[in-house]
Structure formats: C-alpha cells, structure tokens
Length: 124
Image (cartoon, rainbow, N blue to C red; front, side):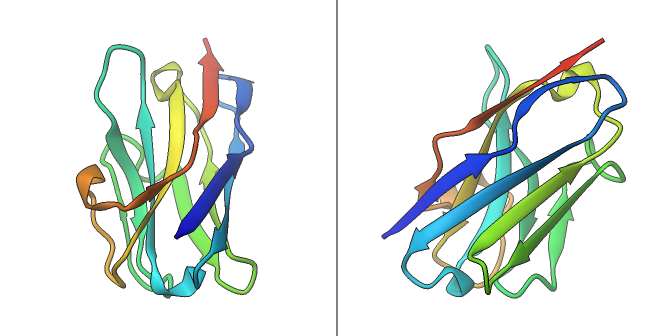
C-alpha cells in the first residue's frame, strides 16, 4: 500500500510558476513509476507527465511540453512537477499517482494509487 499526498497548488497569474510536490509513504517508493494527471471541471482526467522508477525516462503531454518538468527524489520519497509559463487552460485539480511497475505509463487506469489532488488555478 502506498499513500500519496500532493501539495503546492494555488492561484497564480498567467505566465507564473508553481511547483507541485507528491509525498509518498508506505511501501518502497523507488519501485513505483509515478505520474501527474489533471482533471478540469466537466472533463476527463488526463495525463500531464510521467516518470519511471529511477527517473531516467519521462513523458509529457503535448499541451505542457516545454513548460513543465517532472522529477523525483527517491531518497526523500517525493515527486515534483515544476510548472512554468502557466496558462488559464492549465487550471485543474492535479493528482499524483503511483504504478506498481518500474515503467511509466500515460494511461490513468494503469495506476494503482492516487493522491487526493491539489487545485491549480491560473487567472488570465
């Protein structure tokens, strides 16, 4: 079992930056691939960025590529999402997720554990 807690969300103006964190507890963090997903009102949950167990492989959604960076610190059991040049369309609840695999996946259904989410609101 893995417990995930996100933090770092908030209200920011367009063009601003936020850094989200996901703290994990429970089973060994390093054996899980991790990901960030988001869900806006009235929309389905979508992939933002994912990272494999060691941090050597990452994938980004086209909508955020070049503006966000996913990383992890296995010694601290924490994953991060640095978001820059934020746009109003980035407004959503952001969730971190853990997958019982060393390899990352962009498919939400392939993740076994989820955090409660953190709200990111970008004003124009």
